Length: 87
Image (cartoon, rainbow, N blue to C red; front, side):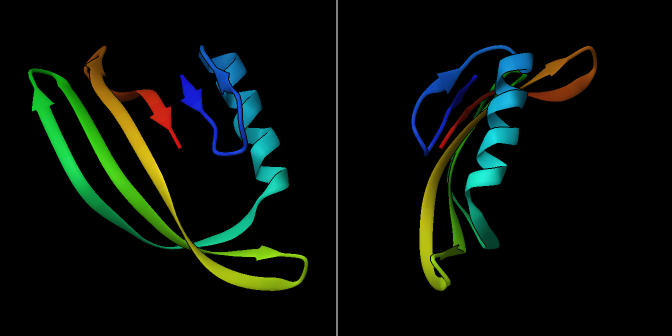
């Protein structure tokens, strides 16, 4: 599942993947660093809340921006998998 910073949400990998591909064509930015605000671990599930600090390019100008990101991660078939991404 993804709640996109450009609006809308998608559920299920086919729709999430398509939304990520679409968003990649709309945003030009370079990531500077990720600042973890909180991580909660319960059993085989982790929830993280982070700030992604980046420089975004828009209309030929660059400006700094911090994006709030929440990830839900759990073990599926012996590997860590993201099941929630909210930006």
